[in-house]
Amino acid sequence: MSSTPPSGTSSRQSTRSSRTPHEDKLVLPLHDDLKDSDPHLELVDTHCHIHSTFQTYKDKYPDGKLADIRTFVSALLQADGSNKLAACVDVYCEGSDMDHWASTLAALSDFPDLDYRFVAGAHPHEAKNYSDELERKFLEAHKHPRCVGWGEIGLDYHYDNSPRDVQQEVLRRQLRTALASDKNKAITIHTREADDDIVVRNLGATCSPSDPSGLRILFETDAPYMPPANMANKQLGMTSKQRFPFAHGGVLPWTAEFVVKVLNEGKGDDDDKWTTVGVLKQARENARRCYGV
Image 1 (cartoon, one colour):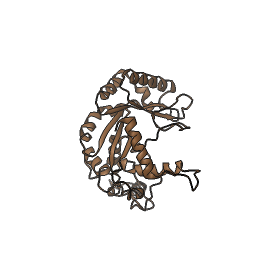
Image 2 (tube, rainbow, N blue to C red; image 1 turned 60 degrees about the vertical axis):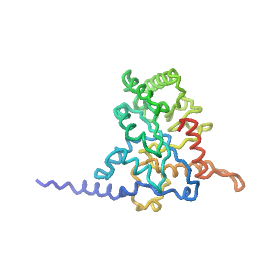
Image 3 (tube, rainbow, N blue to C red; image 1 turned 45 degrees about the vertical axis):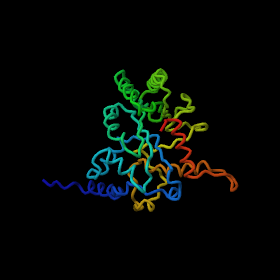
Image 4 (cartoon, rainbow, N blue to C red; image 1 turned 180 degrees about the vertical axis):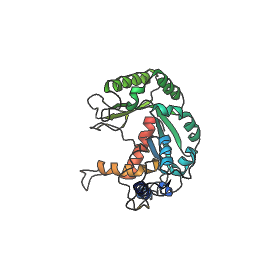
């Protein structure tokens, strides 16, 4: 019996392969706006999922050359001549995350030029699975000095992966636990289509509320999810049909570039305008104030 896959399957696999760039393209070139900037400019990704990003890499490149998470981070986030991260805040927000936070921390905490920190808390999608045992694991992680906050916690009424009343109760429980700890840690709030039930002030926010006024700017990649749409294929050495396969810390300047366009909307020729470098510097200071990184 022939083991040759049906022609349709082969075609789909070929299409996926043609859209995925060679893994060498994952190391992003220095963003144009940073080439003549202060060489001491520090990039800080305040919200990423490094273990999930590594797993995505392994799924996209099953024969890839980056064999472990430390090698992966070194190659993509610490490469000379790229958009090198000075610090990152990793996010452990699923029950399964708590099985590997300690091993990931051990692998990444001693990079000479990367200040690795993390936050921990139950994502609203996971609220239905919240338990005393899971809370114990979160509290154990929070004992570590590199744990700088709670999150991401909150409400998500778009997907409703957990019942809304359960989401609300788990959010209240985690907020009470955070406040009772008396550690004055940051709280990262995930809120989507839940503006009537949640008010965010002076907190880090992902999937921000409809009215973001008053929020402090912090840059995140949410890696591996949602690579910025303004990444030009030609600049990255990809064909027009290829798509950058996942986000990682190196995409941060493209996020900043997009934010600058939003901040400068409506400004006249004589008005002071934000620049990519300027907003990255401001976000870097905000990360220091919020997370201590």
